[in-house]
Image 1 (cartoon, rainbow, N blue to C red):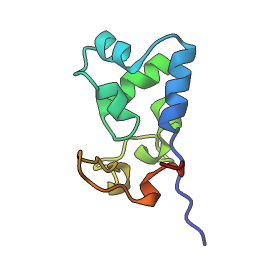
Image 2 (cartoon, rainbow, N blue to C red; image 1 turned 135 degrees about the vertical axis):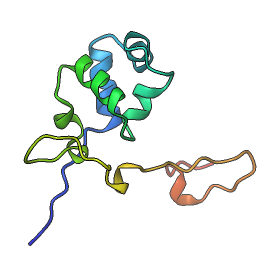
Image 3 (spheres, helix red, strand yellow; image 1 turned 45 degrees about the horizontal axis):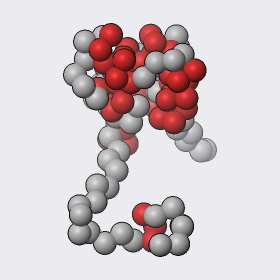
Length: 108
């Protein structure tokens, strides 16, 4: 038996769809009175108000954009969110070494 985990819409695809609508994450923040950066961060990490704002702007239910954040059978938002939904990207300081797996493969 194989457990399948639903795939969330990629942040790049969300941004592409927003650009098709001639809007941006910042515009969503202003329209829905959200703190600066909330909509953009919602593409990567769960935030209920950001999810609602982005989904309303795109005209899609949040369950379709982020299926891993919602119960597949009921459509209810999961609480608490699975830890896998809180992925953080490494942030490099000015003097940290960059390892080959952190680069895009281009020659320096």
